[in-house]
Amino acid sequence: MEKKFLLVSAVAAGLLSATAAFAHHGTAGYDMAKVVTLTGAVTKVDWTNPHIVIYMDAKDAGGNLQHWSLELSAPLLMQRFGWTKNSVKAGDQLVAETHPAKNGAPVGTSGTATFILKFVVNGTPLPVVGGAPLRE
Figure 1 (spheres, rainbow, N blue to C red):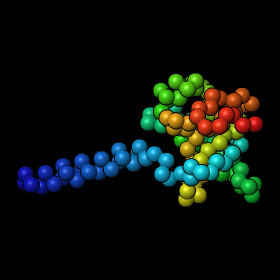
Figure 2 (cartoon, rainbow, N blue to C red):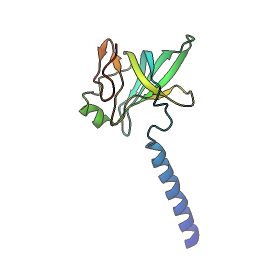
Figure 3 (spheres, rainbow, N blue to C red):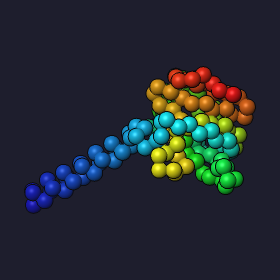
Figure 4 (tube, helix red, strand yellow):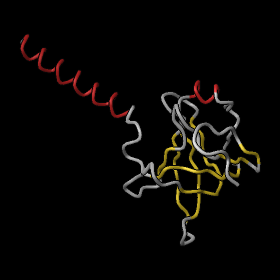
């Protein structure tokens, strides 16, 4: 009975560790050499740890509507960069740059601890960190 408990405990610990590692994945799944610019409406903002996620609807080159999710850094770090919980809200018009997913999914990373790409909300640019200055 004790061996069975140890086995179940070890498997559970392994699964929990894998989940935590996946949640803090870094940028390996994104094409960091490519930047795409999206224009559209914000549908939802999750201002939560471990990463802020902004959901938006934007049209692709063929005019088809795509539902994008853009990952940013943690709320505390974004606040240090000058963003607030109300910087981007559902219903806002957004122009955003992102490094797209390598697999072609409508997912991107737009900010980490070292950079924040261009975000223009209702015509107002938000603070950009690292890399090139804000591009028009």
